[in-house]
Length: 80
Image (cartoon, rainbow, N blue to C red; front, side, top):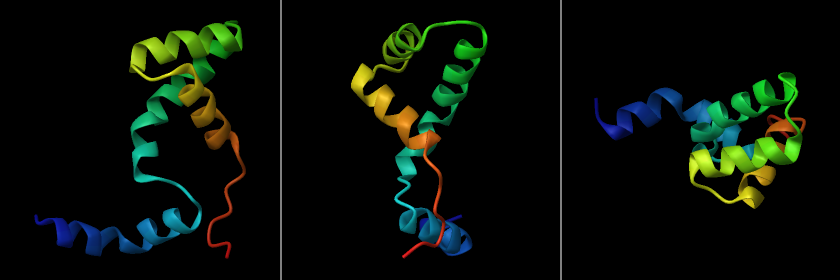
């Protein structure tokens, strides 16, 4: 399958994601956020969980905090 065919299939979803300020690169961090939630439910402190995830995913702690805040934000799909 060619790139334009894949885009054609999912273009409506992609447009809605863009309208909601959701980046395609955010998809690669869904697992990290799920792991963050699991660490918290297991009793870890937020700062320790963030530090652990930053090291595991090779990103800065600031970036982890940014992504957590972004994923916890209420989504406004289709808002103009």
